[in-house]
Length: 261
Ligand code: SF4
Image 1: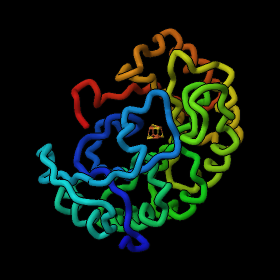
Image 2: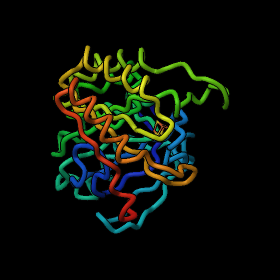
Image 3: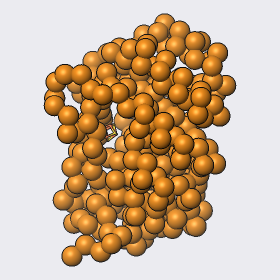
């Protein structure tokens, strides 16, 4: 029988942050199961449904894992993190799937890991506002995506046809997220991303959280994704957006280069 703070876990492992502002930083990853979106470029579709089993790295950096049945307890996650030399990591990342779909567990894990040393970086799709309310007090860095409906649909949407934009929901989320000490908003740019939806996102960020760091992340060709946006397009976007937001960065994923998790 699952207890209140039990959770569906995909994995706990030690690695190096592969994307975003803190790329290269030692990071302990806690990946929770389940996601209610279907991003066309998702590189972890195995996290979409709650996992029957999770895997825990055995020894920091060993690449060796043991498996356990889900659900697991928050205490199990903390013990797994401590066995991987938790305090030696600069960050602990709560990621998924979408970690805020399990808000009670996400908040409890953030609180417990933070008390043991690392800063807490929450990697989220940026839509689960109620879940964020439960966890925000224990998060140091919110790294939220701003989803573009040209490439992303909800799990409940039909597989074809236009998708309602996510801008309004992201704006609501952003209002809570900016209470964190640091706020990062990430736009994944693909060849299909339209200028009008990017500009709409930037306008809303400019109006409600101009202090945010905006990351333009070119999609990584992987699986069904065949093509990245051109350097010219990224440079043009960066130039245009830099006139409106103070902190704009173009940062590709790096972990795919050396084949890390
Ligand atoms: S929100 Fe994250 S886990 Fe969910 S489909 Fe998109 S990229 Fe994949």
